[in-house]
Amino acid sequence: MQLLERIEDQIAATDLPLVGITVAAVPCPDTPVILTLHWHGFINEKLTEVEQAGTVSYTPVPSSALQLNDRWKELVAVDRATMEAAWELGAWDVSRAERPGCMRRGASSTEAIECLQAFGTFPFGINGNQMVVSDAPDAGELVQLAANRGYLMWLFRPVSGGIWADYADDATLTAKGRRPPPCPHRPIPPQCDGNRRTVYRFGVVVSRQPDLSA
Image (cartoon, rainbow, N blue to C red):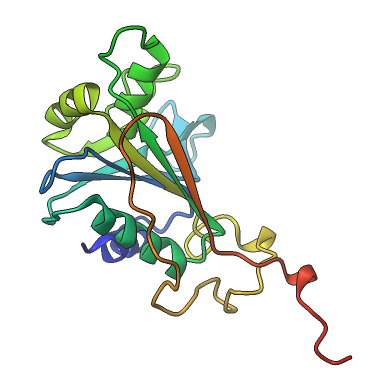
């Protein structure tokens, strides 16, 4: 799965820093995976498109949702691809959430909104502004599957290409906020039997490193 390559292509194309990255998948082999990149930046809104016009407001740059059609047989393959991308991009950790279908009896409306958000189909804007620009033609069908079968969502915050370089107190990073491949951690197979959260911790705090000079 070419997850890292797609992320790096988007970073190069937009020239904007990232706040975070999410990946969403349903537990059905060979279904598309939705990659959403959450950017840090603002669009200057003007009353007229002339150079001298002043900015009247700042609109947040919408997130980018992309559909990945790489084939996979087991969810561990998606897990591993996400871990490899997060590892190389210098993320402190990767959080994986396993969510049940929101069509079950007793499910809250919040769960339905979270499901839509995970697959880049944000149900509404804020102050009339679009929150997500989606290039995911099968997102609607994936949401229907997720609502009935459940889904998984991964979240990580990259240092390389992100806004976190000034706050990264991490002994495992290079000067450019990256780590050399491969990721040394092994995936933990998901259970897909309800609400679960798994965190893969990559970072090591610099101040906690042992003093080897003693």
